[in-house]
Length: 198
Image 1 (tube, rainbow, N blue to C red):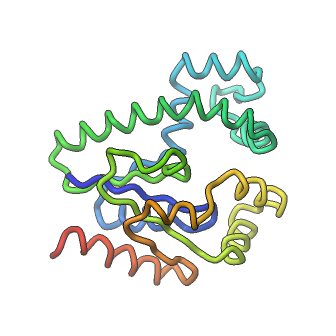
Image 2 (cartoon, rainbow, N blue to C red):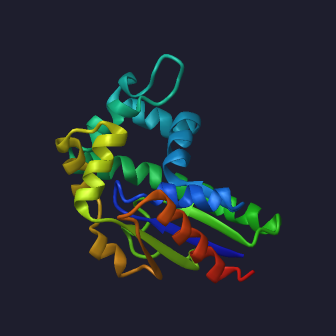
Image 3 (cartoon, rainbow, N blue to C red):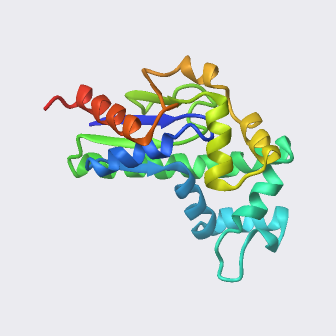
């Protein structure tokens, strides 16, 4: 089984790239979704977050208050590092569980999408790393159009991530997503064919 890691800066289109792979029948693990699920269901992690930041992090139905969490962690790098030090080991453990299950199920390919995939170097469990990139003006405009973020919010998130140049050091494949969705779909389809020739 080939384990592919997909990453890229905010607004690069890495999730859209992965959605294309999903549409082609491949399983994708989304780190953000895994982290949110763990913060809602892992009682040890949930209680640690509540003890540190209070009940404001959770809504009345027990779901994570994502806006409150973002406001806390993106305004303070030390707090962000603290939360990541709690959440990332849980996400990593769940990723390993999913890899074992995928192998048992006989999958040819498993994809892991994560913005922070390369912050500590290239993970050993990955066989191939894809970096999705786009020029900064395009990324900013996408975030304004699709997420309604302010330029301040965009700056905070970009500053919190590695640069595209830093991530490129670890990448096996770089996909330029400065164009259209159709072009991205074609690039994703061509990429996967290089790993599984028809």
